[in-house]
View (cartoon, rainbow, N blue to C red):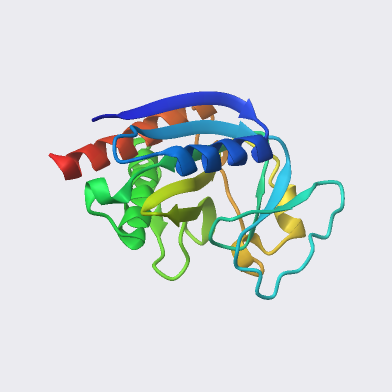
Length: 205
């Protein structure tokens, strides 16, 4: 059984979230895994960790409470979103090893384009120096995943300044455009999604 990679273009966050939940609720042991690549209109999403939550300092962007792990973050045009809808049992993964696999796929992608990045055990995501370029927030239900990763490509980073991104005060965000401007969201998404796919399939072989 392979993994189906789908590029969805720009989508509504809420409708895509509902489609993910629907996919996860209907799947069974023979359902093929999928990886969705998309981009969302401007929205703040608040994960299940609401400890010390403060409302964003700007009121022009909606806030939606969702069922992924993590705290508040921002999504908007110019940010790559990848949703791996994966049965972790198939690949003998737990949540931590799955997060590490996703982080590794982003680090591999950046390295391939001459950019040195790293992960932090205590703060999931991918960093270039002390600035964060990619965030992770997953939901695992019945050993299957939905939600996923966001990576800043070529976007307005100002909305991050109105929140504590992922709950970290004064955390600075960065984006791919600062380092190279020749990669589209679609091509970055396909490269990272296929990296995730190949790592997973290698675990089965």
